[in-house]
Length: 172
Length: 172
Image 1 (cartoon, rainbow over the protein chains, first blue to last red):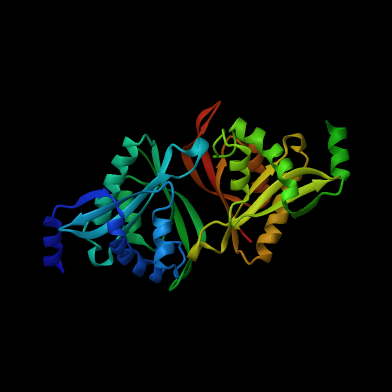
Image 2 (cartoon, helix red, strand yellow):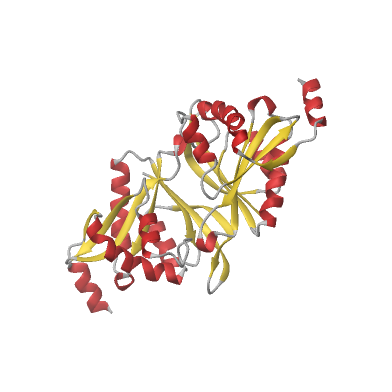
């Protein structure tokens, strides 16, 4: 609804480190995305505890995007590999379904690029962007990522069958 | 040394599930490779316990390649992703330095493809083949893998600086 969108965009979006007080809202955002199983290669039947344990895995630095006290999104930042690969970051973003299409993912991605640079990462890689998730592919391209790999049929989509997943990469 | 190679190739190579009795030999094979830090994106300073915990992580099915009672190699097989990506396998192979160039990795790879099929995987992916590790790249190509992605400068090689890593993939 355009009116709603305009209202939301006028709210200042604040991106801060996640705390335990955000767990309910993170789960509320994550649960429908897990159950739909269309964009993340994660078990669709995960419980709240399993999903939150994953989202806040050791090595994940987790942020939340808030507007007017409401959680609109969350993301984690981590090293994609260890050892000689530890200079490349990885991130996973989740927009609350009610907030989709309002620039939240773009704002979180911009924040993560800055945070990644500040932490000394020299590149960022997305390992598994489901090719049918076109809004995401286009957004990451707009944020400077290139498609550097295509994994044929690597994602079993609940509606479309086996679809490709993309590897996307950019320098920081 | 061709004579030595011929001798070893005449030994029957047996590939069986790893047990705790193989831990010393796995560590002996893994330690020099970790310390050299040229082919795996793993911490080069890992202790024995850290390295063995990684090699036998939950979800890793570990095998050893034995000849005449000696461990010549080891590999793990796992799902590369969860959820909608769980039909794609991943494997990591390690040849004992003294046994390199004798077909051990090839035999382990063939074993893993068969084992992956038996477990119901429909493809296999290598996420991070260091491009300067040309013997490995050529071997995986000979085993039916294609280069489906190239990660620019994703591996900090101790001698060559930042080098590319390759994503390789094949159907099962």
